[in-house]
Image (cartoon, helix red, strand yellow):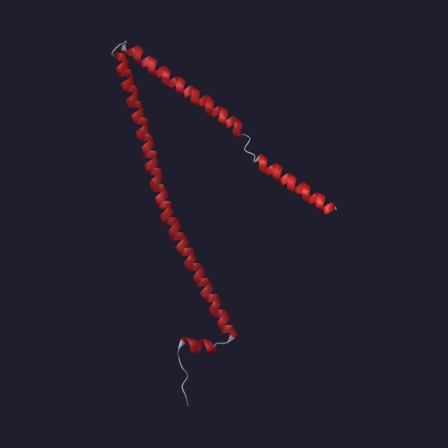
Length: 139
């Protein structure tokens, strides 16, 4: 009696439709699980990288704040060479507060233009589309 080949191709040729469907379901679920694991690993790496980047960005902001403070002290010290120290500090503080006030007014103006946060163009476009569909539906 001849022995059957035990190669995978021979086994697949002898497999029934039910066996093939079962194998397909197993392989599909295995593939989906592997893809989900890969996506999770990728997102973990990206999240860690984003966390490091955010930390470095925050640290640079703090250092920039300290640097600005040093520049303001230098401005006071420079003015103190020709004026009284208290007057030099008062002038620099007034200049900084004036710049802060201008920034606040500009920011408020920009926020006023942005609110309410409604996509008006998209709403108008959608209304026009609905109107056109209604007109074509009545014809």
